[in-house]
Length: 381
Image 1 (cartoon, one colour):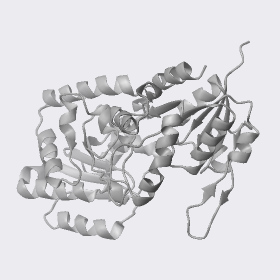
Image 2 (tube, helix red, strand yellow):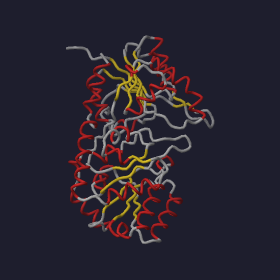
Image 3 (cartoon, rainbow, N blue to C red):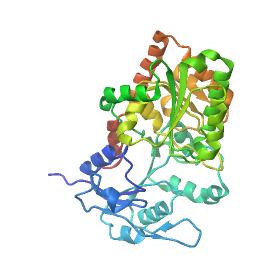
Image 4 (cartoon, rainbow, N blue to C red):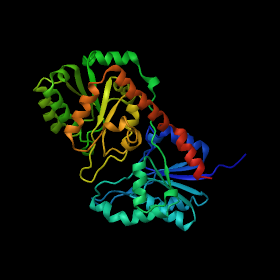
């Protein structure tokens, strides 16, 4: 029996959407996992629950600074491993992995989701270091062409950059039509087109632009006020600011619903209610939307998405398609979002089905874990 190639994986945590991929990687390679932001409790609910091939380092705090994680000592005990797959160069654990790889002649693979946006002074400060690490690593895995171009700007050799798509494990077969009907009854939306937003309400998501766009849409046309409803599923960050916007829409008798955060198991039933989704993320306070996997989740159900040019996933799932790229807007642009809403809401059934057909072709090609496995098999030998 052939020996499996030894692979160290330095990761922040096991996110649910990555677990199927991680499980497959763990089966193919002889893996040792280092999680910098994970807990033993969470790991016991994953594919690693009966294994011992992982390590959670302790964090060291220096007053008000971000906690640091030291993994170098653990890496020294793993010198018989040949490859390291690590978080990007903005993390101190990557710096340690890079040092270890160079000292002991290991192959370093980075997974990086950065692209071109306004950088904070902290990011600019460490840019020379991350640029050096990226150039000297063996491979860089990026999710889209946009991220690929950013690596080229850092003078990374194009042969080292590999497209490594992000994939959702959301399965349309898990939709419970009985639950969907219950939700329609609960929110009284039998004959309405649902515009939906599902995400944490943090600054870079900037759902205010969607709410304002919807306000002007229904204010200017009575038809949309009667035939549509905006549903925002959120976790109540920035509640006070958004309640003012909620009142603004209610004052003109518009239909808007805010829900509490929905359990992941039931989320797909809410998704099924939607006619379209909007992801209005922006670059603010040096924060960004590196990818936004929700686009995969929405499009796996073959429904249209409006997203800004600050959403990384736009460049994988909407760009370079004559029909779908029409739904990418500029960031911070209420008017463009309103125009796209109006366009989609006015489609007849055949026009809507044509868009669904384009979505199906795009997501089927992109949202497939076998693409990721093929890439890893080619570079880890």
